Every structure is written in C-alpha cells, then in structure tokens.
Image 1 (cartoon, rainbow, N blue to C red):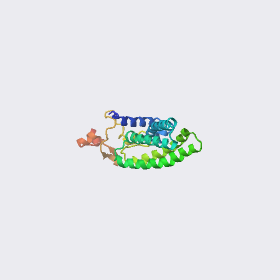
Image 2 (tube, helix red, strand yellow):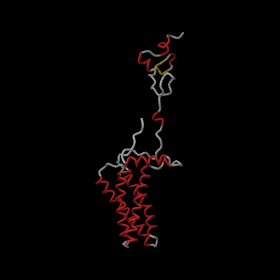
Image 3 (cartoon, rainbow, N blue to C red):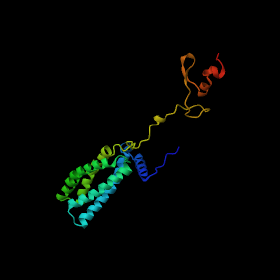
Image 4 (cartoon, rainbow, N blue to C red):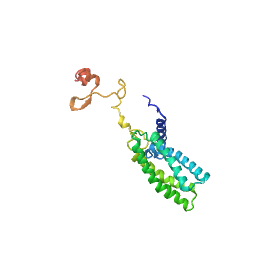
Length: 221
C-alpha cells in the first residue's frame, strides 16, 4: 500500500524535514531530530525578520538600540511561536498555557541573551549586527530546548531521533516457503514427528486434521 501523502502545508513541511534528515551524511541522520531542522529553518527566517526590523528601527529611524532590539525581538519571536507550533511541532494542546510558558521563556531569553549579550557587546564597541548574531546563536540553543522539552512536549508528534529506517526485524516473515506456497505465509502449528523431533506442519494439513508423513503418503517402512 502506498504511503499516505501529506495533506496540509504543515504535513508537507514535516515530511520535507524528515526527508532531508534521512540523507544527512556522517551518521547525522541518527543524531539530528527532524524538529531541530524545522526549528533552524523557521527561526532562520524569523531571525532575518528580526534583523530587518532592527535595521529599520535603529538604522533608519534612529531609535535607541535597546528599544529597537526589544520591538524587533517581540515581533520575530511571536512569529516564531506561531510557525513552530503549527508547522514544526504540530501541537494541539491548549494555546493559553503554552503562550504563558513561552512569554516566561522569552523574558528569560531577552534578559540573558538579548540585553545581556546583544546590548552588552554593542556597549563594548562591537557592531550591533555582529552582537545580535552572537546573541542569536545563544538564544537559538536555549529556545529550541524550551520548545521541545517544555512547551510542546505533549504535542502528540511521534518524532524519532533522526530518520533511520525501522528495524526490518520488526517485520520479519516466518520464513521463505517452498515454490508451491507464497513467501511469508505463516507456517502451520508445531507438531511432533517421529523420533521426538519438532517440525512445522502445513496449514492445509492442520485444517484437514492430518499432519506428518503418514497423512501425506502413508506410513514409511
């Protein structure tokens, strides 16, 4: 039976992330989670939104760095929450609780990385785009951990670490049957043959109530 095709944009995004992770080299397919790739794609986009707004607010409008960072940060992280919840983690839990936890997380992130690292480096003379990049790397690690293990831990997505194929042992067949029987047809019940050796009977024999060589061709001499 053919695999069911993704039906929504969120399904297609998840399928894309899993497909990309499956072909990662150097064993990364067993390490990188599809949601991590999705987080990188989504937050890479929202980080671009953040930098664009920061440039507009501070570079064009001349607003103070702390105010420009705060407004750009709020817009970008609001967008990140919506996109990650919908496309990456496919969460259907109560949005109110998740949003409250997210606000706490971004408040911690804002104080520790945006103001502490971003504005701090700018105050030390580092160009504000560079300081924002450094702060962004720190906040990315922190926010992915929060989203995966706190906000959306009960999202219901059966995510596998990496995209390795399922173990074929889970789908092993009983064995290769003879040419007169289809491959994978379950063997019949175990019966005790002559000499105390346990053998597998034919399902057809079991259905007819006869097993062993006596039922097939009479008693061997």
